[in-house]
Length: 596
Image 1 (cartoon, rainbow, N blue to C red):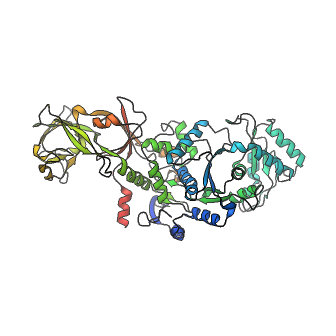
Image 2 (image 1 turned 90 degrees about the vertical axis):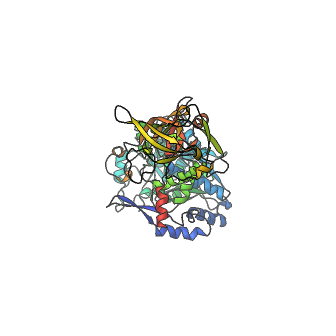
């Protein structure tokens, strides 16, 4: 696996300790065994299966995967793991990957979601070319197959309510009971099914069920529903259909119609696989048959991945929309400043296994920070400004200080930052009566202003409320960066912005949306677990003029000593808005260095 050499072959699996309700980092022995088996090939277990099938000449040595989202919401980071697998495997082995919308429920679908899903896939760096499909493309074929199965005695119309059907399903240890409609005549089933599709019956009045085995050990085989009645017009087919196929019936057949060879999905579909194969074999033969393979889904601490819960947050106004930077949606992560490369690196690190895991959000943050460190331009911004006056600096003098745009990128070059008598510095960088190891600014102590001079604090001024209003210092003209005197060492270095040149900006400080580590495991209403401090807005942040001149929505920057920020789409001329992407402190890397 590609993740094995990363971080000294650590594979992280998060195990929830229900007694202490805290998360532990641990080595998962079974996962490591899987990783070691395929390490020499550099493949994860799914890719290993694909390789074996190709070498065996299955399906004519052809590879065709698919990504099949439902257009009933926005994609989240969990979907990113599936996208990277589906499209990535196709790229690795020279195959193709289809994008197919599972548009079988017009009650919940919208073209807004379709377009958003396309944008997110492209943003991650993948493209489906001319292989864009919809399950609705296959409605006529699926309907014909259902008719054929009725004629062959393999399906029947059931007029029971959903509650009655569920009650007759039995339990894993008790067989189900046959429906009283299970043995109705074939001609009657055909007539009723055709009338269902003509809209003669209300929703919920009847369904079409496959006649399989009500005593099967696999609950999914106990006469599963194939079709239900929906009168809502479909956004693509209009009023053509009044019956719509269920996922288990439509999915495998759609794979077959498209020529999909490997249907890769998450572990919750393991018990569905026999039913997938049962339905597919109504069409397939030895020359070609799709294969379903399952991997573990992406679960993340301080996050919920339920599309239903995310939709609830949006509809109830608990977040600002699907693209709220606190949301785990791809559009939300993009707006927050996460990069596609960082998400792909994160997925590469956690890998693909057959075991569920809860992944630390710190590992995702580490991947984001690692990528932005290489790309983000360094700029000066003061979040909580207080005025510093250099009393011995000429009042009308302005110097241009040369600042490195990114020390990690040799091609980033430098940019100019104006320096004047009055500067903004962080209020937290000054203390009148500091503790012993406070190395920032305080009376009588010297501090370096980044990229400029060493200054010595001489005092401060308070306003009527006792708050510090101004700080005073004297600069040493021999210590400008680049001059011989710059070699003199002092312990503190502060960032700053020139008062007459500064541009005011709005900064939105985002934190984790939930206040508990695993909100999905907690009892009660998940909305009660929302972090009340997940968003704080500062509207008096001072940024350097060079940044204001060039900032464009989506641009990533490192605010020196503060963290990584991105320009929000709400920005407009005269009103800059930045979102906090991530802080500078990397707790995950620190923990890993200790463990090594």
